[in-house]
Image 1 (cartoon, one colour):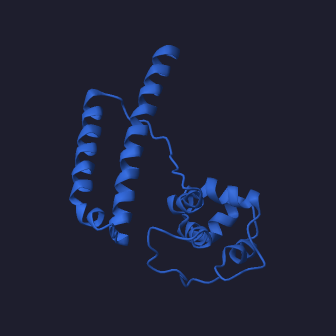
Image 2 (cartoon, rainbow, N blue to C red):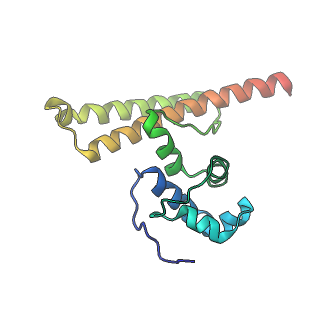
Image 3 (cartoon, helix red, strand yellow):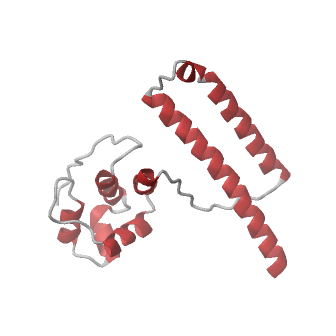
Length: 162
């Protein structure tokens, strides 16, 4: 088993193979623990997650297990990016007046941020850091709003069934 991290200081945007590798390495207990939880031979999983291995690859069921067990956001991003889709993990937050005000404040801050990026938009030359920052802020807003929606639904269902 290699203890050398082959992908040091990985950034937020990874190709799928690198995202799977990183999800395995960062799993609590590492690839060994992941293999144990998947009821898979450790050596077999090591080889399937290896970055330069072309002959071995996770089968669809194993990939699904890695996704389920790790829940790694970089892996989810790598899976969704080619389709231009956004993933969301529902985390209900109370749909209170204060929560709605917080989303309003977040939307205001995001609006100010976007307005401040007028240099990139003016000449239509966007730098990678600007685009990544804009995407992250957009995802934050979407997740906040969806969290409040999930919280409102949960509160309604608790009241109806409780």
